[in-house]
Image 1 (cartoon, rainbow, N blue to C red):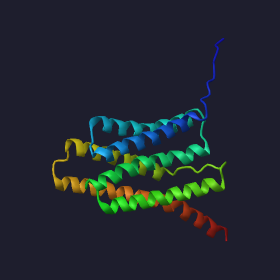
Image 2: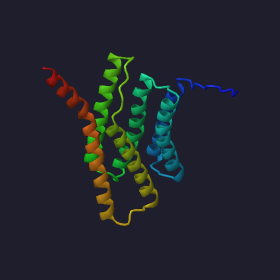
Image 3: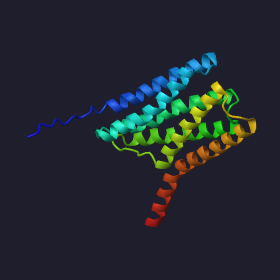
Length: 195
């Protein structure tokens, strides 16, 4: 006869990881904006923050610790970190202005929609679309590339850098706005179908 012990993770632990990601992102970009330096330690810090995005989601799914607060805070944490990164790299001239404006506009609109939805239904959970998760993953990868480029200058030429950056920026913005409007199109089609 085997003795099995079931372990239940505290429901607040994934949310704590998310809050720590927000704090770590604010500290990281406060330091970067203060001295305008990218270092190996700061690249590692950014990678660690990106990994916690996966960790808190995994903990919540694995131990059934999903909450509506977690579903609100998780995307906000990503926005704090990624907007900090893209703001810095725009000011340093490493990414295009059009990309930064469109990215910031989308993230602000999405945050307003999420907070409004949460305020109207605190018990309801707003799932994140796969397309939005893909956008976030690509945004983190782009952020890592920008960190590495600025520290090590690994891109062989200005032309190669331009095309790699432009391609990533177009894909990220396309995913961003598709993810933003897709729920509204679905809801509109559903309402039209009912009438």
